[in-house]
Image (tube, rainbow, N blue to C red; front, side):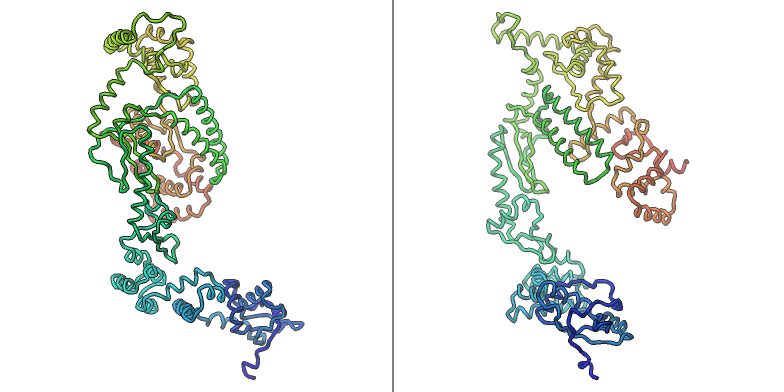
Length: 633
């Protein structure tokens, strides 16, 4: 009997998968595409089956085709008893036939598929028709058509192995064959790196990730008539074909903000798109003023801080990275910072002698550098600063109330002159009497910190924004018990004390004004860390006497950081490279909790400190490094 005569038409509902089919993986891969192909072109290859009981058959070769046919039945495209061409095999040949079909098959060459799609379109089929008939996405067809339009030299190079498929795809960015061939000649063979191809083809072009493009926005650029070149194979790879238009739009957008900043009172406003700074700037800048928060603001900030602290405690206990309460914490912190920033202000008269530079940061957002001073304005600003320093007191410290006293018999100008003369005399004497100066300082600080009052006419203050810690509770109570209850009596009391008492009190008050806590993210945080380093060095601070790493600390670190700390543990430094690598490899496979315990054990007793807690060496100091300490043990 010939092979063709052994083919039978068997109803689909009498076919089922067979356990003898040797393909165990990818049985349902691309079923939708295969179903679309069968619907468009029919079943081009028969199934191999073996007979079972009750006129049923099992498919031993063609399982994906069977799944595609059943998918068409489910979709209502064919009947349940659709006639399927099948070759009926003896049971003893079933497994061999399945193996032969799956082993001997050779996938179509990718470039052959490309040429086939290109031929279909040349014959009149639209990309949409091709996608529908073969059950693939339109983007897949467009990608294949782009490859079909490559230079013949590049397609030939791909077939002989001189270029990888990824690199060939990168050449699709340029439609000009001469440009493709010119770039191909400059590259070493074989061409394997798609990024190098794109860089050569798009040399000098602007990417959509450029900060100016982000600032302008792709929609605004396209609305202005700008063209975009997209890589069909890499959605992140987008190029701007008209960089000049981007520069014009960016200049117009940043220029529109100039009037708004000028209306705030600045003497001048300039813009920059390339990050350059205006010429003729003085080295110093005008700084904003940070007045003490009002009692209402202080209460609000304390309430917000208490809520943040409560949330921090709860979040530490949960140890869930994606805990939704982190968003609540961010909102609270934002509200706290808003209150703090709203208190910031600029001296209106000094602003007239300073300016703002508007630019664009790397993220594509507009940034404003405020308080820049030109050299020509420096002298005027210095004079205004000196005048401000010589002022008797801020306006809000001057008691203008007439209640309880009669109106002055002196003209205002004369009264100011007389009191100014007296102020100068007091300053002159105080500057030569350290004890009196110390008494005034302690009185001002004590009034502010303990009694929350400001002595009239004395511009010395400290803000306790950090709040007392558990260890400071007793010292705070002691300070409150020493000072008089009435703020008005504090200065008189301080004037009767000796220097030793005053110095001890002042140390406590000044300490309450130190707040160096930060989150190590912003430039302001780095400045606080620098201040903390300077003080720690001057005090000879050894944080190992105040803090030690425990399991709670290690559990809060990300796994990548835990692996780094484990690699740097003292015991690890004594191991050979091979053993250390084996231990690190094993640690990388551990769950985070188990790894944290391992790191805690490796560092326990060795005086571990994270970078934020390490006191820098003072000039001329020497230190014993970790390897030496390990060797000494």
